Amino acid sequence: MSIKINSLQIENVKRVKAVFLKPTINGLTIIGGKNRVGKTSVLDAICWALGGEKYRPSQPQRDGSVIPPYLHLVLSNGLVVERKGKNSDLKVIDPTGRKGGQQLLNEFVEQLALDLPKFMQASSKEKANTLLQIIGVGAQLNELERQETDIYNRRHAIGQIADQKAKFAKEMPYYPDAPKEPISASDLIKQQQEILARNGENQRKRQNLQNLQTQADAIQRQIDELLSKQKIILADLEIARKSAIDLHDESTEELERNIANIEEINRKVRANLDKEKAEEDALEYSNQYNTLTAELNKVRQAKIDLLNNADLPLPGLSVVDGELTYNGYKWDNMSGSDQLKVSVAIVRRLNPKCGFVLLDKLEQMDLDTLNEFGAWLEQEGLQAIATRVSTGDECSIIIEDGYIAEAETPAARETPKWEAGKF
Image (cartoon, rainbow, N blue to C red):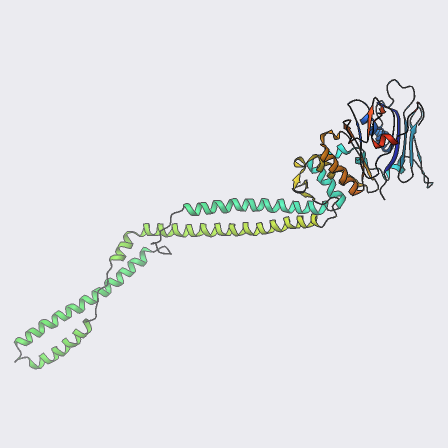
């Protein structure tokens, strides 16, 4: 069970002359009053009583008083804490018989509960580290964040290269009419020579046909004389005619054009090959980028799952990019009420035995926000003792010139009248 403050009596500490207070066990107890009347002195006195000598004010005794400071706190676990006498020595009375002293108080008094501004004024990273420390996932989250940064940097570099490759490939010329491979002049010349050889053979056959035709004409004129020879020649003629009827000459025009333009053709081929290679490179880097994106998303999801499954002190709390967030908002975008909720919840988890927290200067909150914060404290079973520059009804007590004013507040009606040197 968390320990709270049942009652406190303070005399001659800083600006306080005499104050007796029974704080609300669950919820918000507001110490009101104007400036410089002793409100903050009450909180400083509680810090000194419970936190030890490091919280001792530099001038603890009230100006003008010949009586030394006196502090008397009764805690919900039965402990009585006193500081009195010339040296304001600490005395802790434990009804269970355990040894008293500051060491006993340190078991359940959380330092940040006495000095909440220390947490609230810390950097976003320090707040996040405190949260990760108390939920026990700091080392795991740090490793995931290291992996995330490493993958992100590699992906970023790959993405830049992929963009450069794609841009380079896009700007390169391409010739769709060029062949796929560079051509050879010797191959073209060889093809040309083969065609010329075939064409020469065709020409020889045509010449042979012409010769035979001439002979046939001569035989016709001498038909009577050369009849037997005519039959032989006519037979040969028929054979030659059949041999030559399907012959077609091949054109060397395209080869001659290619030979003449071989350098230009090969330039286009090389340009096309370079463009295709550049496009392949760009695609490869794009695929690498997509693979790293998948890895990055996996690590980020692992971070989300780690925090979602953690035992957080307040629903909606998380750590994003090393910064504390609440309901999706970073610290500087949270309302004052939410900042207090987050701070109190984290400080409470640091030491669950400590059921109270001290808050100074709540005048920044309007009444609706103040009521909302007080209701949350009651719901969470937390005790908060706070100061506010106000004399309104929201104040549990009002201090005037070091004393509790004669105000019609519930706490004031229950507060015993003070007599000099006596509670």
